[in-house]
Image 1 (cartoon, helix red, strand yellow):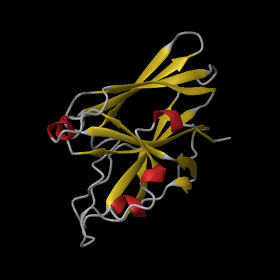
Image 2 (image 1 turned 180 degrees about the horizontal axis):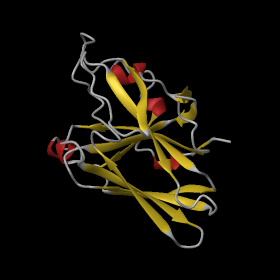
Image 3 (image 1 turned 45 degrees about the vertical axis):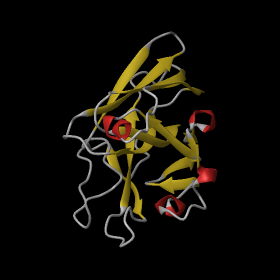
Image 4 (image 1 turned 135 degrees about the vertical axis):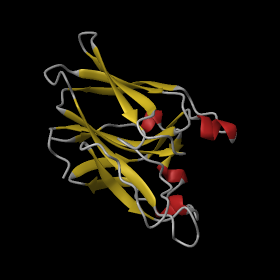
Length: 194
């Protein structure tokens, strides 16, 4: 069974403030969605510090700690993107599983591999290179002419200790150019994403 993780307490921007927006955010799919056969509950946005946004005055947090999970699972599916691009393979953020026995497992999310800038370069869409990442959704546009569609990725992160309960997840910015932007997480079986 795939279970969307409740991120309500961790969102910096709730979907309710964006759904009726006249900007491109108003056209983005919110609430319950199924992308690539993965059920997602998209109720807002979490941001992690990135130099590009910091220079513009958006000083997002360097870490988000204690996202409650409290379940066993084989794979975590993360629906995300970045603000601002970086050279390929540049770390964007670390996602850390915290287990019931005190163990942890760190997964580094990399630009161009696992996630991309949501503002695409136009009709020539670049895709994430990891076999564990697919385009979750594309649509709307960053520009009024519609030539720069938004792109959000869906990444499958294998749990190295599926027999142990993951009590929580921590997120840490890699403090590079790109801002990590996380919309939803779903815990479930491996091989769900098609």
